[in-house]
Length: 237
Image 1: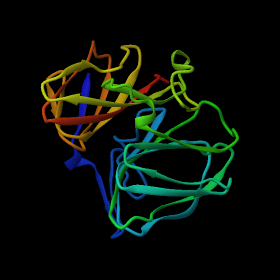
Image 2: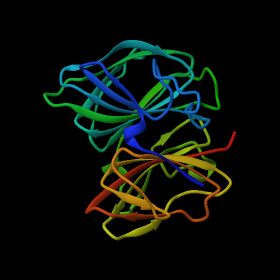
Image 3: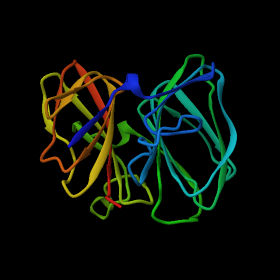
C-alpha cells in the first residue's frame, strides 16, 4: 500500500516570519486522521524568513531531526551547543531528559527545511546535538543513510538515533529507477524535496508525502533532471 499526502492538502500555518506545512497534526492544526505513524510523530515543511526564527523553548524525550533544503539554520541550546546547519546538512537533537534550544535563520535569505520528530525507544537519556553533511557520507550512491538506530546499520552512519528507524536521502536522475530501502515487515514515510518522481507508478511532486506499508519492492523513478526524496524507515509498533 502506498498512500499519497499531496502538498496542497497539508496543514497550513502562516505566521509572517514562518510558513509551515504540516504532514501530521501539530500545534493548532488538528486532524485526528493525521496523527503520524508511530514512532514518527511530526513532519513539518518550514519556510523561515531571513533574520527570524524560533526563540528558546523546551523539549523532552523526542528525536528531532532537521534537514535543511535551502539556506541555513543556527542552533543554540542549554547544553552549550551552538552551530550552523546549511543546505545539504542534517542536525539531530535527542531531547532526552530535557533540553531548551533556539533555532534562528541568521541569513539574508529565507531558509527551507524539514523538521521530523521521532519518538525514542529510550526515555530520559542525556540530551545531545549533532550535525552531519551529506557530502561527508556520499559515495556517489543514489541512496545515502544519514542517521539510524537499527542494528543492521551499526558503524555505517555518523549519527545514531534512539529508535529502530533509519533516515535516508535518495537522489534519482531523470528516467533512472532504483529500489526504495524498504522491508515489507516495516513501514515508512517520505517526502519529495526536489523534482518530480514516481513510486510504483504513482506520481509525486515536490512537497508531496507518502506512507508505505506492505509494498513489494517499491520502485522509484525520476521524472525531472534532479529529484530528491527524504525517507524514514520505521518499525511497526
